[in-house]
Image 1 (tube, rainbow, N blue to C red):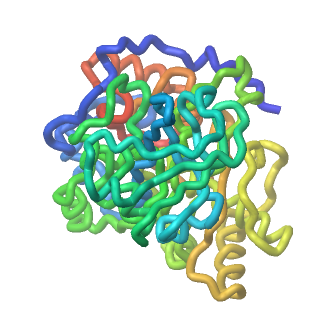
Image 2: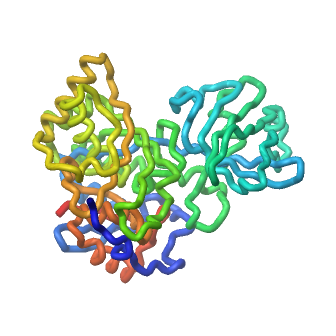
Image 3: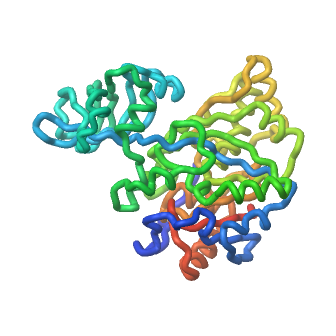
Length: 401
């Protein structure tokens, strides 16, 4: 079993170093480059000059949904319902298309004040279109701050439209402010396509159409995966030993054509964000389950550390392609709880574009694993040279050690 003390991944992050708002220009952020112990810095728009032309860059094209809804009890108490995971219908695309009701697993704010009565949406702006929806919430069950909630509305609108009109973008709690107009645009990547995340894959927030076009012009291949980021990304590691920290499941989708590319065109693989890393590195273990069990299964948290794996990366990827072909599918759709910590064997990702992460977080553990434990020199440099931290902060380009 993994024996890692989370306190070894602590550092002093002054509040003033947390970027509370995005810069005016997405690609104007600073960019730290780490290459086998050497550190230098650039501006993010310089990234195309730093990526080899024979690379494949992998982007997570998930889209953040305005998943925070505020309801009012007849007593006046406000109850926040934060939609986490679809329950009925269970697929994201189906639940966003639902036209009368749907059920979600939710985090419930002010949960103790909700006695099980039907809640009505708090239409604080007195918007007549919102009023016509008559959005209500019914509590089916609750355990602590989490519960199953059925939402109902009138008018035949798809639930995606209901969220757009009624919901708020769930910006990270460490920003210590309410969602503002700027977040509607900037807490979303320019290439976001598929609804489902309650947190942005923040490494992608720096990319502009101009930066993407310059990468294409250089010959860099662009590939997409989709991992829907859950609220667990905000959860700190509270247990003293990392082995006791439970990872949340996140669903992901990878196209068959991309799996073929990975098999036949092994170029430098550059992951944009930790969510892309977790998706890509989960593929190997999904392929192993294809080889051994005949079908891909969700990747468990500690699967990479339980034994020595004898299969090559190519064998694993080929097993996934063969499974999809036999099943007549164009996409692999499963989930992952994988945790990447020091000692992890990376099989696919060579370079990583990522922001600077919270102390004692699973994301910082991933960074440490990627740079073979040298994370502190990177973070000391960033703290000493004016870099901005966390979701709206600056970026880094890391070479795997």
